[in-house]
Length: 257
Ligand code: ZN
Ligand code: FE
Image 1 (tube, rainbow, N blue to C red):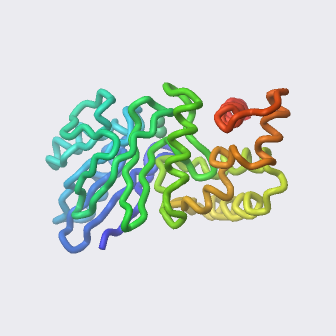
Image 2 (image 1 turned 60 degrees about the vertical axis):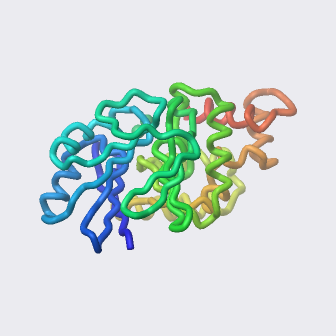
């Protein structure tokens, strides 16, 4: 059995920590800062950090690699198409990789960055998606086109509904405020907004999410919904928008929301 915990980093990042409790081995996803992982290892003597999984090259995801690798000898898994210091294994779309005895499938999900990858464990229904899909939202388009990001998100949205979504940032509340502006009449958005608001007031994490919940409440996965198409068309003052154009309109709106 693998236990998954979030180690908070910076102001709103989570470093996901996968723990194989039997073997006392662990892996981390996107350690932007080494310190929270070092603190956990110091508090849990006898544990070995075996793998460092990286989704993309931004500093808040890779900043801890060097120190953690030097201290533990952990293997560093990265997107093949991005330049990342300390890389041991470069991963491409549809590669499979074994981490803590679990098989992970690799999806290339360009958009936020061009080489961004996601790690999917299909039997356990885990998705580690970095800054591509967020709870209630999606990453900004720093490198890719709306078409690329829409395609990437559509692939993730097609995963089984029970898939647990482990993204890197605690952006859920502000994402859901935007979702409520896009779909004011979606009761599931209102319900989730209230719930996440309560969780955050209580200092609780809002993750992981699930693909089913994202399909129901995340506007960026709902570009085919009549209500979403209508409001995107109003904002663009255009008719007959394609799903990619709907996505582009939402993303541009959210950038200034
Ligand atoms: Zn990023
Ligand atoms: Fe980030």
